Length: 270
Image 1 (spheres, rainbow, N blue to C red):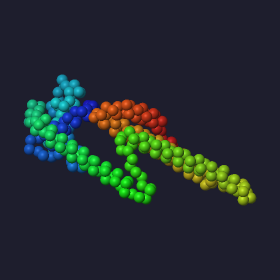
Image 2: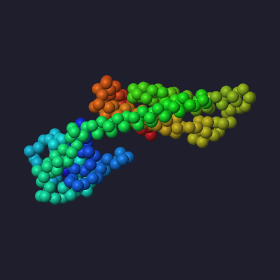
Image 3: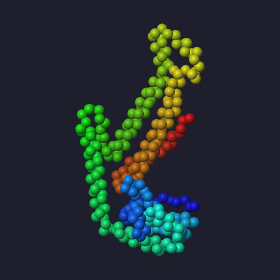
Image 4: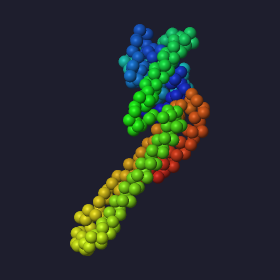
């Protein structure tokens, strides 16, 4: 089977906007996305992407195959039906189905869409207001406040917290490595002969090997993974945001470079 190139996000958004969140098959009301955001619908090719697929057109380019005109949202059931009976569901019939369905959700329905967006915006405002209210009502003095919630500030705050965690781990690691040295000094102060500890084999001496796996394996691997995943999350998030707001473009390039650098050095210590 041919390898499928990714359908552009812009195309998927346009398809969804004209789908009404409903399967395009006539008479079907199955949703594309459930109320909880679960994707249960499928993006169907009218003329197959793969050579062995139904209604394949060898004259099409990959761009045309993944283009808006060759795609339609349907539920799993009807996707299976149209692909199992290509002689009945021809290219012409499917394009008619697509056009008829999408006409229901053309520009004349944008007013309803704007209303939905306004409701979502108000709900978001209520949510954040309630969280910030928790900060103001707490009088313990120890409540961790949310602070700023814009993307850049949050990313910087997480990065600072990561660096603080790394510094604390470094302190614990250094303290663990100085354990034997510190004990020798304390023994000298108390007039205790530390040389008796030398009788213990190196591999069994907890003063020498204490926290060895955490210090040399667990901590470095965990922090490297955390940094890489954080950079990856930032890039994935900004790639979606930049489609709507070009102001995030410079930050996206910066995060891509950070992910590239982090990934280059991301090797498990074993």
